[in-house]
Length: 457
Image (cartoon, rainbow, N blue to C red; front, side, top):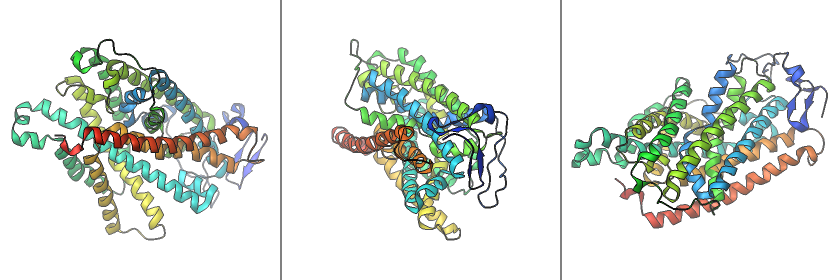
């Protein structure tokens, strides 16, 4: 579809090549695109974020908490298959992010929810809300598990004398630390209606990620050889947990629900500028992910845990610094996921009602309580990442973006230009079903083998 297209007066796009999901650089480079209000057809003010700021924001959104589970993904899929899956999924995420931006142009919508409702009506909105809520809930639970995996080690290392007493063993235990984190830190912060200030933590999050990657690279060869892979143990090139690994990698890479905000914040929100941000961010995130995934797996191989930091002793100084930074990052990130989950519930059940502080507190309390139960019960971060990534992230990243494009594009819905979109949808459904089923089976097997998480101190 070439030429000039005008969609209900909201956007005027020139020289669009729909088959390639891109716009002519010659035209878009020389003009400033604006986001328009759907009702009044007037420009909406957007913050003038630079390309560099948008790059850091998107990179932080891609390289999130799931990065510490990537060595475990390599162990599940095998070295060659795991590396290939990280690269393939990174390319797929890059493409679907660009498809989402194109969908925004075609539909005139400025949010993921608005786009899906525009394309598929109330049914689409309900489906999107469910999976987005599940993604947020899985993120909340994962953050709690991460805190339980990290802070007890730090506390024991900082205060070893107290940690050896009965009181110290109780206060520094995983169960107590998780309960304290949720009740006295995460829950009060989650009660805020506006957590905008907490969202300005991209620089801190990037520092935490870099510290984790550096600490794994530096400390891996220096720890007790008994903690590393046994001498002569093989590097498994292909393994049976491919779909579980896809769930973990997808969880680590998916940031589609945040992409509209980043796109709209660009000083000149043209597709060419945003596509450049996507490409650079995805490349940097992929390189960082491959580094920690490959090196972490090579060091520990069959001993690789769902949280790579758990492979290191609790008295390692550099690793404890990384643990502390990561835990602090989870404290500031948890309320944002709570906000997403709370808004999903409001959208589904109380869409036409006025704000109620009582309802706000009740929903927040229930969400935090449920995630506290999950965090106290689940002690394998890898399984939680598998389930969340396989069930929710695959739907948001690999199914909805191409489905919305097929709905919006002109011409036959089944043609050569839509073949990649149909293939992506099929891939997304395959991953969603198989990864979820196999991850549940994997979780049951681990539960039977390792016993209850309540036995951990």
